[in-house]
Image (cartoon, rainbow, N blue to C red; front, side):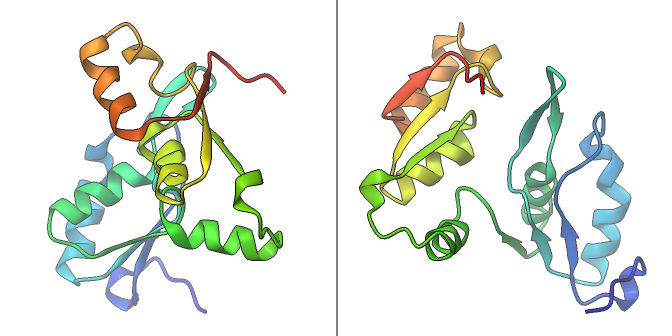
Amino acid sequence: MDCTKKVESANFAMIADLKDGLSILDFAEHLDKIMKYKLPLLCANPDYLVHNKNTLSMSGGTVAELYSDLGGTVFRYGKPYEPIYQDIFKKMRITNLSKVLVIGDSLWHDIAGGKKMKLDSLWIKNGIHKSKLKKKDEINPLLEKYRPKYAISHLKL
């Protein structure tokens, strides 16, 4: 596969992890160009937000969501979408799903993926939803929707 930075020569566009400190406005011109050529967008990290050095930063999933909202076609690979789990199960030869525990800080992605795949999940509270923990009207609907089986305040390895 040949890679190009020339949108007019591309078959598709791809986004994954982003530099810290970017906003959605930093992508407006690029998204307009991609949209002009009706290119599908492959999002290799559907997370909306990531924690980098105790700071929340926008991730590729946010840009992909905007592109989709604009009418663009988006293909997502990563949590919470099934193909990444199926690939992991195959590569690791996992046959007993009752022994799998999904661990993550994103209710939207990590825990949602576990729920979608009918896997137990452990939600790490001290992550991207940390600012919502004291706002019950914001966190409770997410917890009700995604229902992690377990939760801990932080994970230290």
